[in-house]
Image 1: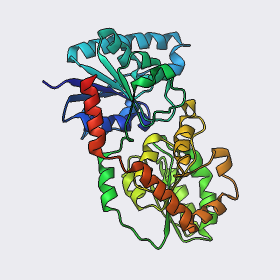
Image 2: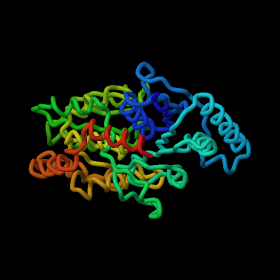
Image 3: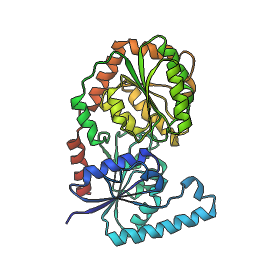
Length: 358
């Protein structure tokens, strides 16, 4: 009989997308289930995955507001009932405050707990449960804020990528007359990318033949406003939201300007797409900056703090990038060097072996 695994996730796409990839890796060898909160559910394809939606309370607030503390207690007991009823053997958490009641319940019931940390700075929830976990899957052995006494619990795996990414890699051939720039703000969007980056693009378009793919948070007024701005300046463009097939835009781009979510950067590196990372300055534990600097230190990308990127001379920087083929070629080669071991089967073997042996 196959062991039963519950993957607990939720919140942003940064937690939820790796959870769905784990599901795909493990479904052949285990009986796998997903649980998420309402926010996380928006990032899961309901046609492809079956999942349970549960309520959640932000960790930042339940310590100070009594009613939220009461909700956490209720969620904890609901988790115990759910775990016992379904006879789960293993719990895997992708981090975040959403997973706390389930992980506490799993500890009380004596279930095996595993963690996944996709960022280069360990999150608070994962850090808290290190004492209870069997192993923690990470993309690097050197995570910021990781306690040294738990280092033996780290299992390093290549970055989790959606299976379709590997198919894009083998079929990718492109030659374009226009220099294609993709602008993405991640699963949570980036309003500043909509307000401040467009003037840079307009200035750049006066000196370079460009085409723009721009992720925005869709609403009719915003779509019309941004479209009219691009049209007025004779810039070729496509607007899309996070739920569109972003892989199409990534694979066709020559340069990406992006936030620094772990999944997005891992996909760009694997596909050898040069990128400029502008980390979200309010990310928890500044994990986006750590994600970006990890690749910057391997000479795979360019990193700017938000306050420094949206300046008048940034269009000159982008122009230099677009015309400096040697620098772009160097970044691509460095990306190839660190991603060659990232195969679906390699990751699958590590995950399955670890879960069976511990």
